[in-house]
Amino acid sequence: MSKLHCISPIDGSVYVERHLASNPEILAALVGAEQAQQRWRHTPLAERVAIGRRAIAAFTAKENQLAEELCWMMGRPIRYAAGEIRGFAERASYMADIAESALADIQLPDKPGFIRFIRREPLGVALVIAPWNYPYLTAVNAVMPALLAGNAVLLKHSAQTPLCAERMVEAFQEAGLPDGVFQYLHLSHAETEHLIRSPSIAHVAFTGSVAGGYLVERAAAGRFIGVGLELGGKDPAYVRFDADLAHAVATTIDGALFNSGQSCCGIERIYVHEALYDAFVEQAVALVKQYKLGRSDDPETTLGPLVNADAADFVRGQINDAIRQGAVAHIVPSHFALDKPGTPYLAPQVLTNVHHGMRVMVEESFGPVVGIQKVKDDEEALALMNDSEFGLTAAIFSRDVEAALALADRVEAGTVFLNRCDYLDPGLAWTGVKNSGRGCTLSRVGYEQLTRPKSFHFKTQL
Image (cartoon, rainbow, N blue to C red):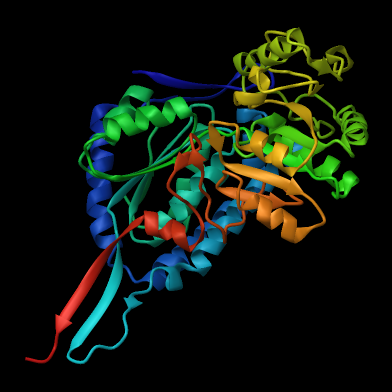
């Protein structure tokens, strides 16, 4: 029987071992989900919401345990790991708060002799495929609204974070969710593709790489089902001449280095107006030097290892290529003792004298490196921000709200921030453009992706 091994980036040990689901187990899960969904869809919405709220409480009650598991599975410093549990609760609670209004019938203006309205019906069985970098936050974006809308859910997590799928399902079981409505499966890539092709699957929500998105779309091709894809990013920040310098430095560097840069919407390139450029670089470098690279289970660590050595070496390759092309590296890796090629421990890096002919400025890095480029005005910054195959988020730093709004309207991204970055407000649609994917989660709009409209046109006078 094939097995899954979660190798901890902290020390290379096997932290979790699980068997991969067999074909009979997958089939049983599908049959159970279909049968359970037929009952669940007729459960009153108020009852579904109540179960969801109890699940949130059961989940957050284990905050310390969940945080420690996250720390060991994917390497987030323990001092920050619990933040994801609170973020899970924030997003799940918001989707529960708006469920009644978001799923309410859409009433049309009165028309004598007719009753007309649109009802949002569940799709059936939704497959949620979640990544390792924010395993709870990415999963809850689709899982909670899918369940509240009356769907059944099968959850497949990354092999790096298998306990996350188990813990989410456990919380809903403790909350009294009927058997079969929410299940997890540990699957190989091949079995995941096979599952997507199953006629029992009515929707797929995938978060991961662009390459993974291609595979999902290919597997779903010809099935005419909804496919939500949240893929890669190369998110830019622009610091205008009128920005609050200290705030811009602190915010963009945190956005670039939090979670060791392994954030879909992390800041990976910064464009700074020439009037602030020198001061910005000086303060940014000084701030980065204050980070402490270390084991994730050390409470003093502020920068943990990347998920594995290959990921770290990929970023090292981008940095080295940029330096060979003339980029200036401001951080000496040896100042961070644990940094060593062939390991997941990677020193943060700030690069200047960069341009878009360098991989580090156009390829997704997913690591603790950021390039800072000088610009002369808004138009140059806008052209560089949009010069990307990705379009997940972008950030503008300015005291002029109207100027920023005019600029943001021309930025090619699913979300544009002003004076902040790297945060998902559950009241706003989470979406991307270009190779950052398609579809939407969170907000009222997120419910539309997990339901189908059904029109009722009754003639009442004959």
